[in-house]
Picture: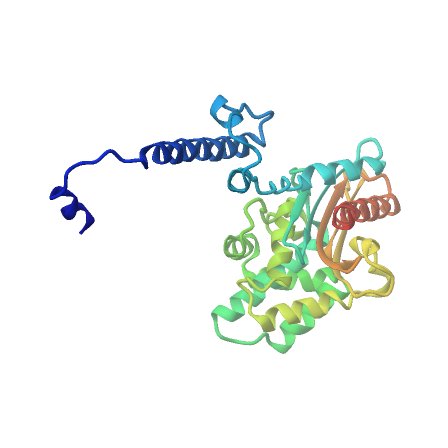
Length: 321
């Protein structure tokens, strides 16, 4: 309406123009300052900001300008967990000829890290994988484990009985059956041993961590009942086999694990491995530690325990800091 009325009137000099020009100029300065602030924010990660002359010319005393130019705090960069893990493991002495690898997941935060990507022979830790495959097959067939299968499963996990492992290895279809299950579990670098040689299955620490996620995590191909069953067996390991990743747990806390040990006939050196869930410092962790080339079983166990403890401590140090 104001525009139409203006057409019927004589144009008169306006005293508002100087004010209008001043307003426009002020808006330009404010806009330039805001632009400068955005530019400074964008450069915050890369180095000193280059401020334009328009931004530097803006009056800093203006409340509106100060509000526009304020820069929100920049989030700290994410922690490089792999680097922290590698640093922590420098404190562990690895004997000449021995090798080790470890993968850890902080269940509470969801953060994980791995050290080393080489493949190792599983020895008896593959028994967890065998039972997981058997449970998955039983789920697919919509059946429960038979009494005989449960007897084998208990002896295989709690006592590390090899005859029971051989029986269930055949039941799942040996390496082919293991491979089919592992494809669904998400294991990409695990290969079943030839024939009945389940103990010579090859795997990585990262793959074993993936398996532990299937056993202890909610997002799993295994049903809640299957997971609970397997967890219970891993929590009832025979007394003389309660070593390995459990060394990283708080005293008196609950843990669940499976160990593997194998003396190589050609060299006399030992493969020593341990996988499981432990609690430390108020957090739950999944840990998979592998080693080979150990001169004795005792030295291999000490190495695995030292590596597991150092790996978990790396997560606790950053959590406390």
